[in-house]
Amino acid sequence: MNSIISKIEHSSSLFEKKWKLKNFDERNALAISQKYDLTSIIGKLLSIRNIGEEDIDFYLNPNINNHIPDPNQIKDMDIAIKRAAEAILKNQKIGIIADYDVDGSTSASILFKFLKHYNASIILRIPNRLQDGYGPNIKLMREMLSEDVDLLFTLDCGTTANHIIDDIEFKKIDVIVIDHHLSEFELPRVHSIINPNRFDDESDFKQMAAVGVTFLFLMALRKELRNHPKKKTEPNLLSYLDLVALGTVCDVVELKKYNRLFVIKGLELIHQRHHKGISKLIDNSKLNSAPSSQDLGYIVGPQINAASRIDDSSLASKLLITNDVEQIETISRKLFLLNEKRKLIEKQILEEAIKQAEIQNDSKYILVYGENWHNGVLGIVASKLLDQFNKPTIVISFVNSNGIGSARSINGIDFGNIILNAKQKNIILEGGGHAMAAGLKLDYKNLNNFKYFLNESFEKFDNHFFEKVISYDLVISINDINHSFLNSLEKLQPFGKGNPEPYFIVSDLKIDSIKILKNRHILIFFENDLGEKIKGICFNCVGTILGDYMEKYRNYNFYFGCTVTPDKFSRDNKPQLIIKDAMKID
Image (cartoon, rainbow, N blue to C red; front, side):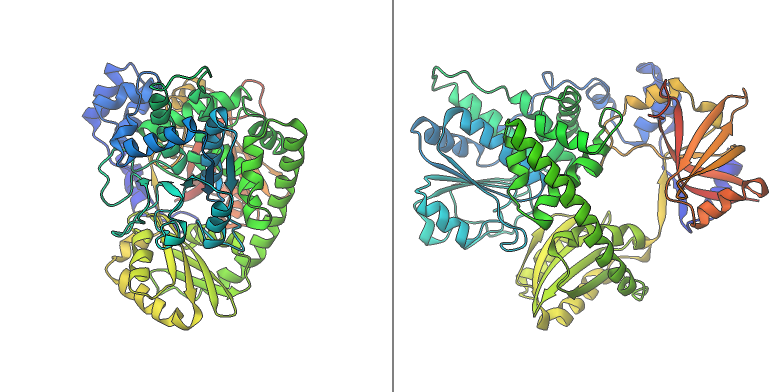
């Protein structure tokens, strides 16, 4: 094993990446596997994920009924629920302004459903991403005022909306902000701000998406309403967890503790086809198995986001709220087609952006911009550039001199703070977000000042932050991979940020044969020491250096970097390797 590790550490993969094995405590891993009757590999994986002994049972046997979070840890929760209960009991008019992404749409959906159970007088508005931009604005606030709204919720937005939601023009409206974005030291002067990431909050929920925070608010509000009994039965909050799971996964927050609980229970509901709108989006995608957390993030989420990126921002929340079968059919089909259109627009802009990024080799960040790039895909393009170049990335679209940008970051570099600092120094017009993602508005005349500011901000980060390093969990043998191995990996689900899918290096593979599929993918057949066939697949690798070497497999020996998943096209869900990279071994 030591010789294998030495070869890995002193070589580069075919994709010119360094492979690094994660560290773990061997004694701790052994103790975990023995105490909880787990395989040694699962014990090691839990140790790698730093699951403390006190949290192992919570992790392996998650049950939301046994691990109920306390919403009142969050600052302002007590005064917010009292005001909301008052509005419900007095049948006051309630408004909702929510962000247009999946997190905002799911937050709006569960709050709307809950309030509608008690109160028929609710107005929901979603800002138009392309015309209004992020968060509440004067136009929407005036609309709430003209509708005589008494209480307004802003969801997944509002924390940095100083001088908008607290403008004296709107003093008749009580505003409750429910959000999770980083705050500045100056908060809007409104009724209450429920945000675990406000600077003065000390709660344990800082990794929650806005939909998770909204769910906690509803838990507290339902409890408060029990002090004012009405004849109505109360809503079943657990029935909202499919929406909470969707928003949590798609906002790429850490799937630890309560987030993980939400997603596990939510996936159960999704598998039961509890929510007609989510089920229809899954059907449109032609998934051939029960959806996983990754399917929510990569297949369902993009369809919901397509509404605001290309068309009408309100379509997503309409789909997630309604029970009307015809409306669900119409909206879901439109979202599917909009997502296909989004892919074409994104492809064109990405090609232009890559050309700019390729000449920024000496920079510690990527900044690309263009005229009239579609604002709806800037974040996706930024994410793809980040994946390719492993540098924090900003993508800006200018219309005349008005720029709108989206930023994405790598681990260890907090882009949200960098953007907030730029705003505080008046280098950009607006900006905010969190560590891994942020948005901004910029005047073209300040572009060079912004670049200078970014150069200074990134100067303190050593070059090792930007190395193309892929971390793998363990080196395993082809003989380790069987049904039992696959079943044990299921204990670690759901996968996502903070609870990543295990990446393995398989070291002793002998390729038996290959088959090219659709002139894009390569199907690879291996054989273990017992003569059993195991299949691997390398997606979209034909024409790449990896694909070229696979086609000449008889001439080389390889270590493979891969994940191990069920083969959903086999009758008995046999294990298969999803090959991400390979290392040629002399």
